[in-house]
Image (cartoon, rainbow, N blue to C red; front, side, top):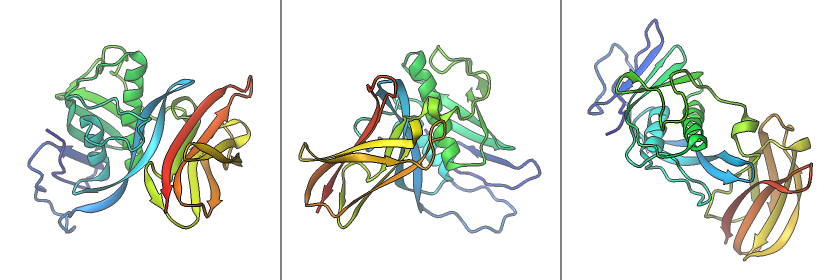
Amino acid sequence: MRTTFKSLMLVASMALIVSCGNGEPLPTQSTSPTPSNTESNAVFYFVADTPLGFKLFQETHVITTLQPLAVETLNRLVEGTEAPLDPDYTNLWGHGSWVSGLTILDNKATVDFGKIKLNVGAAGEQMAIEQIVWTLTANNSAIDTIRFTLNGEPVESLAGHVDTTGAFSRGEGFEVLSAVNVLTPSEGSTLSGDVTVTGLACTFEANVAWRLLKDGALVDSGSTLASEACPVTSPWQLELGLLETGDYEIQAIEYSMKDGALSAIDTKTFTVE
């Protein structure tokens, strides 16, 4: 079972209510055209274990949906039907969980679960919550806070470790997100022409170290700068130019300023034709 788009109404309370149903829009006074399947860039946040513990990593997936993007991404995330492209990432949701409703009132969202099946420890439960918070707010920027209910009733915890009776909002990026995150090229993509790598980073003095491997052998390395230094998470870009045909891996790295140890890494494999 999943949340489906039934009505989208603009009223004095500025409420958006999406509930379980047969997917047909309810009659309204709106003159908006009937929704049709739309191809969209959807943002998902997945989890990976890093030298500093569990962190979130962002991926953009192209999806086709009839529903508002926030509803569709929430469904796919919680049901576990949208797998990460990068095999280093994981989705802590799935395994039988599903959402029966999403309500947005005055920028405050309520996620109503039909079933919660989340078998994780305290750190995993917190990151599973962060997955929902960051994914929902990425796909609907109007959302400020999120509450959780189960079949319409307040829920004390999703997995028995974290108090979920209050509201959640995005935490500090430098605490929740990986210090480095490669966004493009996406994992397993095939490229031609000049190769550009993009990503996000929150690092000391905005420095992002990188390594390029071809068929497992190091062919180039260096560093680039994000647009801002930590505590701000900001974009960075690397121009690799024309590369020989073959299979490559790009690594974005942060080393500890204290002892030089690896503190964060994200990798993507791609093929150049």
